[in-house]
Image (cartoon, rainbow, N blue to C red; front, side, top):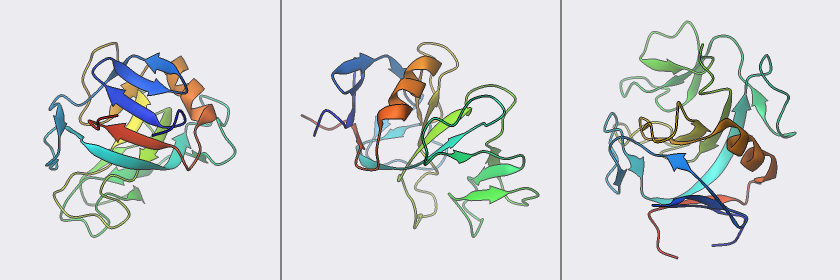
Length: 167
């Protein structure tokens, strides 16, 4: 681990010498993550992308991709594009990326079960904005908006996310 890695502990998310309060999945931490269990998967995860709402914020980094109307994320294990970004109309189960609330105004993508997803192992694990302190996610890691933006500006493709790993 390096100071440029994100490290999740029971106290919060550590990054570059600072501890950020965060929320995790309602299913806790699990090594055997499955679709719909609400758990945050234990492991070392790479950061593989960043999405943002250009109608709500400035581009956080030069490599962030805008979320456009109709952008979705497939979470349906019967979908050939399971655990991939797709576009509406889409006949399989999915999650809207362009939401009415601010949860996905800024999304950091991890490589959980991607780019070659195993059906049923669980769809995307994002780092995104929380609803409120302590409110659990469906498996993602969630932070206060300003903390998420601070982290997003300083991460690189070398940054890793450590979940449930001992130092």
